[in-house]
Image 1 (tube, one colour):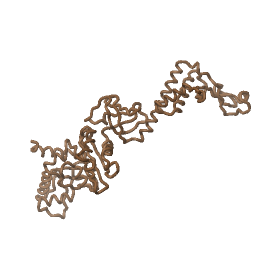
Image 2: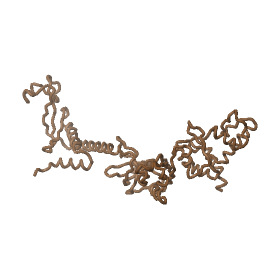
Image 3: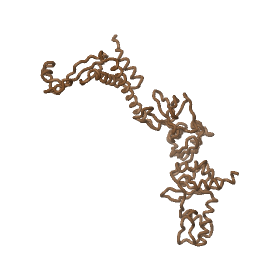
Image 4: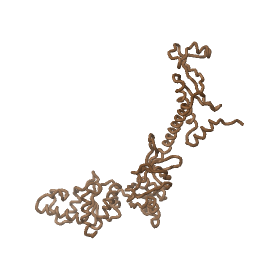
Length: 418
């Protein structure tokens, strides 16, 4: 029985350990031998070759056949080539002359080792990039290996991934050896450290968790039309059912909330609002403001996608949310700029406009009132004026929660909070 060469055994072992092809290791060894031999044979053109039959590394000095020799270390004359190889030798052919490798020395061996490690590392990184660049957006399970300047290094099988501080939820804390589930945010080709970047704050993680927990989403009966998050605090998910008999919100919540509760536990208590998506932007915005109850919604500027939402005085703080979080998420989810006002605030605006009309002066800029049609008579009541304002459109605050809206909420709610 033929014995296996020790070098071949080592090459196969390294290839399996690093997850690369043996040919890559062989090429790395050949490059390493050439790099080491250049310190010994400085002026010659060298070529290393791994003999797969004998399992030995062979080194050659390569010389090119020319008519007139200008560099004896890399060229050989045609006449001399004919003496060595007969009439088969022709101009521009290359001839290899064996060179010994036993006397390369310790420094050459260290150089060869460094080259091999570098080539193998480059091959590993290319393999990781090729594999994981196709898996961006996928949820993976890993184990916390160590911490580096606030970033978490996660072990994914034989490769390491990075969970940066900005991609971590502030509601979560981890220790070494903890299991962590995260979504692949991206893969770097040239990074020095871990190439795979994970995220615990990306909305894609929320979507993937719903796909895993809700069979109707997995089979396509229920579709997720949008998801927004403020990781660790609150999230909103818009769902839509392709079948009339299937309630999309109920399917995501599950029996007694079992499905959504498992996702909330995975996200360390992050509150999740599941709302029904609608093609009608007014209905969609009304659903997205949940859990607050909306009195009425009107489109202020269709081109700029601005809406005005009127809620009861008691619902104002709930609609705006803590530090404007609820309406901010609703605006991101729907793509509309939302200006929330209480009924009392709206009533004051209408009264101000009525007063301006009675004295024949336009409303002040602070009233944020839209100009009325010149052909329209003075409204007979506040309700008529309000209807006219909704139809004509009016200036509004900025997209998500604006400071005036938040200040109004604070002032209106002080008595009730007390």
